[in-house]
Image 1 (cartoon, rainbow, N blue to C red):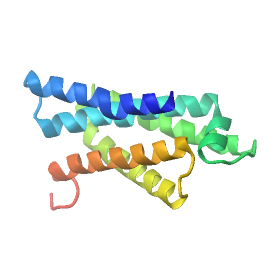
Image 2: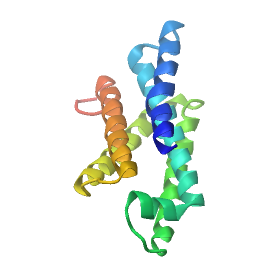
Image 3: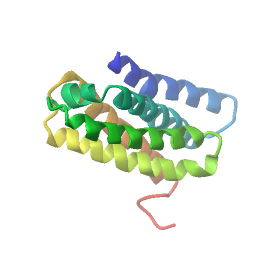
Image 4: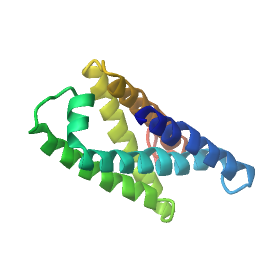
Length: 156
C-alpha cells in the first residue's frame, strides 16, 4: 500500500496534472512541474505521511527506521506534526500560488536531506528504500524547477 501511494503521489498524479495544464495552455512545462510536484509530491505526500505517523507512530519507528522502542513513538508523532504542517501549506499553494516557490524550496531541503539520511542509514527495509528513492526523486524534480526559475544556483 505504501509503495502504491508513493507511485501515485510522486509520479502518476503529478504527471497527469502537468500534461493537463500544458495541453490546455494553462502553464508552461516548468511552471506546471513546480505547481504539481509541490501540490502532489510535497503536499499530499506529506499530508498522508503525517496523518499516518500521527495515527500509527510505532509503524514508522519499527518498520521504516527499525527502532523497536515504544518511546520512539513520541518523536515520530512530532515528525508527523511537521509533515502535516508542511504538507497542508504545500496543498494550499494551489490556491495561493505566491507560496509555491518557497514551498518548493522547503520541500527540496526536506526531501533532499531526508533522502541523504536514508543513504547514510544504508536503507535496507523495503519501506526505507522506497522512502529513500522517492525522497531523492522529488528533491531532484524540485531542484530542476528551482534552478529553472533562477531561484537557486544563480543571481537574482
